[in-house]
Structures are given as C-alpha cells and as structure tokens.
Amino acid sequence: MTDFGMTIAATDGAARTGELTTARGVIRTPAFMPVGTAGTVKGMYPEQVRGLGADIILGNTYHLMLRPGAERVAGLGGLHVFSNWPYPILTDSGGFQVMSLSGLRKLDEEGVTFQSHLDGSTHRLTPERSLEIQGLLDSDIRMQLDECVRLPAPRQEVERAMRMSLRWAERSKAAFGATKERALFGIVQGGDQPDLRIASAEALADIGFHGYAIGGLAVGEPQDVMLAMLDTTVPALPLDHPRYLMGVGQPDDIVEAVRRGVDMFDCVLPTRAGRHGVAYTRFGRINMKNARHADDRRPIDETMDWVPARDYSRAYLHHLIKSGELLGAMLLTWNNLAYYQHLMAGVRAAIAAGRFDDFVAETKDGWARGDLPPA
Image 1 (cartoon, rainbow, N blue to C red):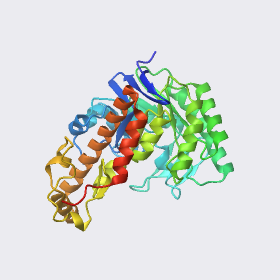
Image 2 (image 1 turned 45 degrees about the vertical axis):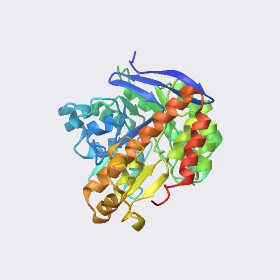
Image 3 (image 1 turned 135 degrees about the vertical axis):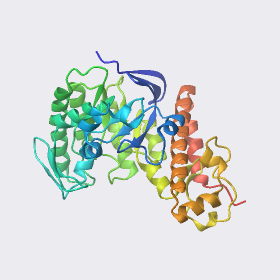
Image 4 (image 1 turned 30 degrees about the horizontal axis):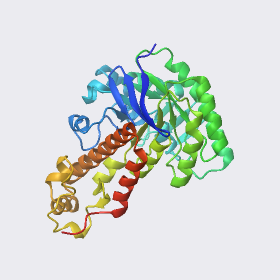
C-alpha cells in the first residue's frame, strides 16, 4: 500500500481543491510545479522556490540520465539529497524530449534509440529503463514512457502513437511493480481526436494508476482545441485521482484547465520568460526590454509582497536585461515564479470560498487592462 493519496476538500463546479499526500510532504492542489530540468530551477536557490510556496518541483529524466547520469545521482543519495530539495519531486519519463529529437532518434515497439544532444552518444530508452532511471533518482511521482505527437497530425499517426503509449503504459506499470511510498501516473494521448482521448483515458483507468496525466497538448494547437480536449478527457478519468496537464503554463490556460477539473501543472514558461526579460504580473506580461521602462522609477507592482516586484525599479530591471546581467534574469525569474504561486494560492482560496468564476473574471480583467498607466 502506497502512502500516496488524494483528498478533495472543496469543489466549485468541476474545479476542485485539496491535497496530495506523499512520503515527503503534502502538495496543495491545484498546484503549479516549477521545472527543475537538470536538478535545478534555473536562476533560483531551492530555499527561494520553497519560500514562494512551491510544494513540489519537476525533474527531467532525459537530461539527468545524460548528465550527470542516474546511477551517479543514486550513488550520491538520490535527487532530493543531490539537489538539496527534501520535498516532493515529480520526474517526467524523458519521452517528450526524446520525441523532439526527430532527426536523432529511431522509434520501435520496444522503445526509442536516440543520440545525445550533448555529445552524439547513442542511448536507449524503453518503458522499463525510464522507470529504472526514475527509481534511481528516487522521485516521488513517476511517469510512464509515452509517445507525444505534435499537432496538427494525421489521425492515423495520432492513433498509432496513442495505442503505442497504452502498450507502454502496461509495461511501465509492470516495471514500477509494488514500489512503496511512490506513485506512478499514466498519460492520456489522442491528439485532437475526442474519441481517441476517451479511449486512452478509459484504457488507462482499467490498467490502474495513482494519477492520470493529460499529454500531447500545448504542442501547436490553439487554446480552443486544448480546452475541447480537456472537456472530453477529464470526465473520463477517475474522480478520486489527481489529474495533471503536462507542459501547460500560460496563466489563462491554467485557470481554464482548473475550471475543467485539472489539479496539477508544470511549465518552463515562467523561468524561460524571466531569462528573456519578461515579467508575469496581475496586469499580464510586461516586456522589460521595452525602451519605455528606461526612466521609470516605479517597481513592477508595489502591492505584491515579493522582492523583485516591490523593491526594484523598472528602470533598473530594464538596464540589467539590456546589459545581459545575470541579476536581471534572476530577479525576473523570481518574480515570475512568485506570481505563479500567488495565482495558484488565489485559485485554491477561490474554490474553497465557492467564488472561482468571480476570481477568474477579476483576474482576466486585470490581464485585459494591461500594465499600470505611466507615472
């Protein structure tokens, strides 16, 4: 019997808030998981990430298997000890990164052979090897190996990948075995085809997992298609298990997915945007590279209680970004992750209070109004 479990504390329509219990701590849902690709959330100290309110981060199997190597991480005490993050970690399977290497990989029924983007060396990833690597990393939530198809794609290709992913799901569960105190999630595929999404969800539920991820979205399709697939898929998933929308991270996409019953999210967007000079705020995105900030003494948003939004002028942030200074990327990354956790805390509170629709309307109104008027 695993220590992993989900408790739903309140609902508002299909939106829900609660807790996931793991051996390393409780995850408040809906949750946004900062991405720590290579054992680090870029530009952040682990203590900062935790202090912003993150209960869980994500690690990347593909990158960690290549460098420094899963066996090495295991020998050094596992990913939690290695990265000084003693709280829950979810690891992806490595499949998405491998599938993106279209010119460097060869897919077959057993798995995928690929060349490292680092040195060209050849590696093999199968459902069994992916779970072995995730076990060596000792993550708390592990993902099945699946095949993700970029959209748009022909139905025949989408169905082939979905069926392959289901066969790999069965093998992943067998490889996971009777692992105690850890969890395994299956991944729904099916592209933009409603019937394939339902078939995938129902088959995964029959196999039985601790949670269910919705994959293959935010891969080129417009938002209305993504939301339509959620409308189709989420009702087909078990009600008392967590639902994880993989790789989706625009704030508007997150709140709309929560509206449809999704519990977990991850995305590189807030950290990547910070490194490229973009701040996420209650006014929407602010491009700090823009020349209009060069003489602006105001902070990003003095009403917020995190340092980058409150204590640094837009003029200074603009200068740092234009100068290529590391501090600029660090401060905006900090701001963005703080905003995302602030958003998720607001989502949870609104669901608990039964006013989620009002919260979404107010939040979207702030984004639509845009930045504060010039001083």
